[in-house]
Every structure is written in structure tokens, then in C-alpha cells.
Length: 216
Image (cartoon, rainbow, N blue to C red; front, side, top):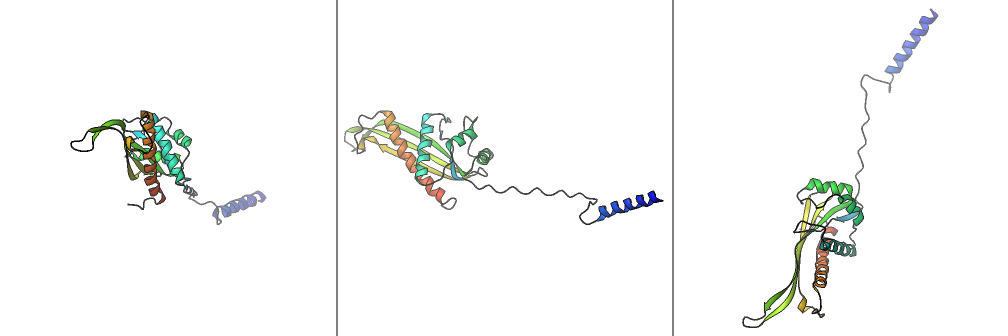
């Protein structure tokens, strides 16, 4: 009898535990995984590689224009992500995807820490001697003319969608510059043209980034 009473007490005790508030029930409740906190961007923009109409991005003009654009944006107090960090994310991509490929740019954006991605594109970059006639019957003058045209495409980093395209265009008649340019070689003309075009592109891009998605 003694062992029977011990067995009965054990059964009653286990039953009480199973049915007590906070005890086990027929259904197991799995705690919900807490939502991941929204990551606030550390920088206003990440400047990706400058693309050229030829489709390449390894040209020295591409790297030089990107550096000038980044420098001018920094002067406007636009916080820019570190270029080495950007290149580590783009490693393995010999060319950038089409700007309509939002999923690819969203992948870049998630790996970076910026609010927007900037993709500059140079459509035309040329310096050549051009004959200009100042009057219908006048003598044609040979002038050295430089032209650089393109646009900066701005994409949201979180979804890779294009939110703004900012065109830029610079045309310089080197013969009309205040300083004497007769002894300038083609490379010096290219550098001067690129600096001027990058400053203009950065001014308009910076203006938009200071009031994102508000300007028409």
C-alpha cells in the first residue's frame, strides 16, 4: 500500500505540473524572431565606377572622372562612402549592369552603407581642332575645341531603383581661354576639360542630394 500511495502522489504531482498556468500544453508555442532593426545609412552616397559609351570602365578617363567627381561632392559636404570599400563590393564585376537591373544594384546597396548609388556615364569625350568661320566671307580659323557630355544616374541603395538622371555637358574653346594654350598638348586639354565638367556635374548632383527626391 505504501508504494501505491507513492505512485498515486507522483501521478497527481505530474498532472498538476502539466496543467498549471505556464506549464506545457498540447500546442507548442515558438517565440517569434524579433524583426531586424532598420539599418540607417552611414553615408549620403556611394560613387560607383564611371562608365564609358564603349562599355568599358578600366579606362584611365573613367577613374580620373570618378576621382574628380568625388572630390567636388566632398567639397559640397556630401558624405561619400570610401572608394576602397566600394571596389571590394564590385570586385569580380568587370562592367556594371544596366541601370534597369534594379536587383543587381540593390545587391550592391545592401553590401554598402549609403543612401544612394551614383553611376556617372560619359557619352562623348573629345578634343580636336575645328575650323570656325567667324563671318560668311571671312577666313576660317582653326580652333581647338573640347566636348565632354554625359549624365549621373542616381539610384536608391535599398531597392536599386533609378530616382534621378542628371545630365552634364561642357564645351571649351581652348583658344579663348585667358591663359595661353598654344603649347598645351592633348592630355592637358583633356585634363582641363574633365575638371570643368566634373565640377559642373557635382554641383547639380550635390544640389539634388541635399534635397533628395524633392527637386523636380
